[in-house]
Length: 480
Image (cartoon, rainbow, N blue to C red; front, side, top):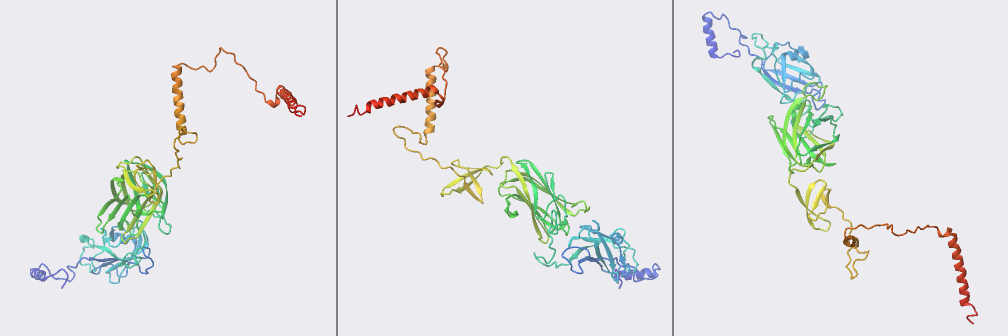
């Protein structure tokens, strides 16, 4: 029995034949339109782990088509007969050739030039509006674009898609800049408040940007994934990282996720209440000027800081559907200035003598305990700042303070103040005159004694007198 016919149809057609409306009934009078059966990706030589030149996309129909068995198709002919979506793999400079099977039930498309990347379980194929493909018998003029029939891409690009989190499948992680071979896929992958930079493979030198507490900031990221932007499932942006720390150490993170249904979720991890007014937008766009199609996921994050952070390095982490993950870090990073909008934070710490103190944290460089001592954070521990040794205070004797006493300088200053006050009371507001014009001023000439001839003469005379007196007093005559 021909497709599309049932018992009632045969009886009806028989009656119409008796009436002379139909003279004959042929087998192809009600031939069906070819339906898309499967759309399968493959890598015939299993030469790599990713979509590349030589990979194939095979379109299988449920019945034979009117295409020439064993015939070939060019890129233009394929694009004229088929429409691809999610993404449109005909864009981005893609080229390919087509080869029909001998029975015209399948078309194998071989990739000859890379452009937009097809995505397993996402990319679809459909008959184009300009297609000429119909059933093989030609008894029906309906083409394959009738009814909007589609098929979704399955298969793989040379890997086992049944694996877990290992490299038995696509092992290429998304990137905001370059891949592991150093090839740059993305230009201006990180933009913060209008300051753009090309992201490097792991560590990206970034000038220190200063932002203010309470003011909105905008960060924009462009992410390339070799399986297409639809394959990116997770992205996070973290603040306040110290040297050598990874994203897990950040206590201020903005996280975006997309589930298998395409639902997007925004999460803010902020135990110290540093962030506020966080919102996020996603889009697709150009990765660079060379790739003119929309090959990148664009993530724009709006956020405002409530308080400064201890460190300035910022980082990103991204992974795709296969959990291929990568982290990038940007230093010197972002420094947050201004007074915290949060209540002052208090922590407890123990000094080197075992005494517990309550510390009030004013900012990352201003931490004071209840005694007024300052502290600093080192290797995760609060350390009390060094206090210079103080002089031991001696007891006060009946004579008061001597000049070696610790309080002598204070005592001296006090005595000076008392003397000044007493003198003011004696003078009763009068001014002391240093020079009194009523007395004659004697002028003295200072001469070095070795150069003073008169002085030297007198010294000699006095010496002679002394010798004479000595002889008189101690001579033998006076002392028999």
